[in-house]
Length: 330
Image (cartoon, rainbow, N blue to C red):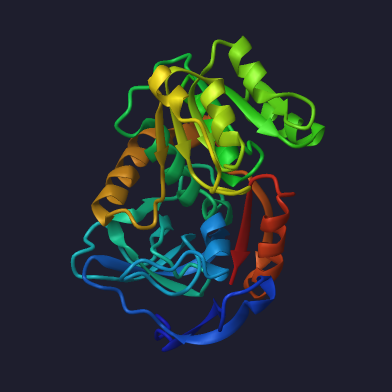
């Protein structure tokens, strides 16, 4: 006999912006799925950089998005909207959410859900959507990236970085990654990077120039890395700015963009149209999900914490000591 749905759920909230200690467990109304949505009972949720920014008051949710934190989950379908014909109650999925993942239940666009990749445990699958949607949409979607092209990944040991290293390698690219320690270097080399660059000991500009220059650069650092990326890039290269860990305001010479015909683009995912995210989901399922079964890519989970330790998860994320994804389980 199916248990009746609850009317409330536990979720992480905060009353005012601030540090990790503002996060608290609250009782919230159970979301109701719209006709094009499903309601998922959350098995695990991923912790991501935008969650920290939202907690700090620097990344307000887009119109129509949940006010709750959490941009990706894994779990089981608990209810289905009348237009969400692909999914059935009980299906196990992982999904990109429009917020709301730090909770026991979340309503999700049905087209942003994916089946669990073959061989991936359900908890670990919660750490896949945000990074795979981000890396695929910025590096590959709508772009022809030739086999053997050089991809430079800054922060190679983190969530975005560990995905970019694996996916770049699986797609036939040469992958260089910047890291902060010998241990992190060993980690990214194990993921398939050709070269790990300890930025405390080497200059990634020199390393990339010796290799002929980077064709694509993924940067989460910002600050003085922006001008240095211009130097590290090959002519006609692409530089994608995903975050600004060390700052976004600086005085910079833009002449290299013109002289080297560079493309310099910023990127956010949460505010993109639902149709765009659905396109990414479809391409991931056909082009990338089979690579989990073949072992070419895999989940990289650093730690799993209970939902009521979300503040500890945020502290760990801010410390940048993690290797791969930090997950929460309600």
